[in-house]
Image 1: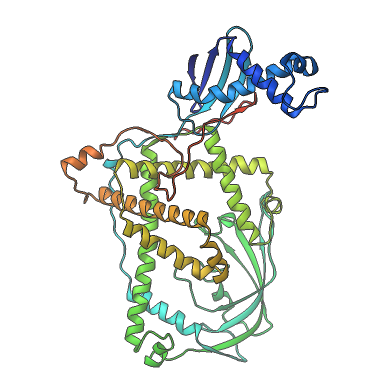
Image 2: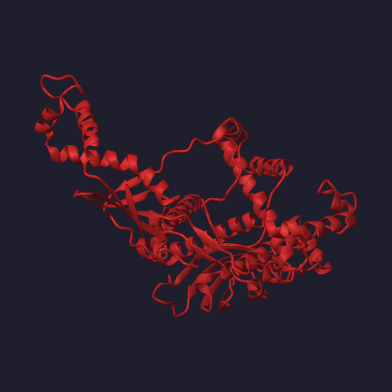
Length: 495
């Protein structure tokens, strides 16, 4: 066997493997026997007809075609071994030259590669804000409003009142892709003056202020221009006209801020304990939100310094995963993908290219960078870490899954393996992020031995998936090639 490698720009390699013409003869015999075993040839039992009879019935070209397929399947793993290639996905048989010598031309997708560059030079301050008394007070007030009593009242609406309205909303000067009518007789209830501390107000923060002074059955029309950083991306910078009908007004009577109120929540004996519990809860949430943003921003900086390459097949797989995820999420809204695409006025091809593909590139890049960081930094964990994470995941599942369904899942070996692998991935990612925080804040200290072990370097990934500990040993299969002449034209992403 003689092979010739031709690297391609899309992180694939073309391999031309040459074989003596006589090499095909042994496979012709196998091909003929395989044909005979599946065919009915008069006068012979299945698989017993001689070669010349089979050739007469089915023709030499049919035998040769089958022989080439058998030969390709058998020699493909040897070609990869000879070329020292671990493919990221099945290779593609692009061409067969039946001359002398016989030539197989394969296009093989290479494993993703990651060069992290000078990521250890990145510096990023870690400065989470403490919870303020104002935040605690707002939290307590929201609790009080939740447990308030509401009485209908015959007067204009004031701050602190609970109002019920019907809302119509229309975009002023809509673009070609906009659906002008946003809301039609949409029911809404809100407390005037109550603003979401996370700025998630609907339809926008401060909407209720427009209702002050309105009495039951009165109407009002007003306009609002959404900011460029609005959480409603499709409304950023756009002016919307609202028409509301106030149906009724209710006065809220809030419970007193005392020990009796605190005891309503079971675990507190005094109002001061309730405030302290609220502070701890807010601090945990605020810390979690800050960490998420910090690590996402830090990962973006690392990814910008890194050079990540992967073949189109890996990108296509990630795109398929995103489509499956979107389809799953839409199903919970009783909507299918086709209907969703109609609502955003996009053909599927355009959606895949403009929305799905960039998201897939971003996901892959970050995933591969995290994997490489964990490898280069030598991140490890103890069994106790894994067991604790598995326990946390099971607690989460108990809260969101019916007991009988969860019990059935826990008897499934594949399900347990999947949970364990996901738990391992979470622990590795968390420890990797902690290491990156230490590096970015300049607090990471290592010994000379550790420094040698984690010297940043260019790496070729053996898998596009996270290298995680397996629960069971998986038998290795021989790599396969796809027999097709269809070429992949999607360019791979270089980041």
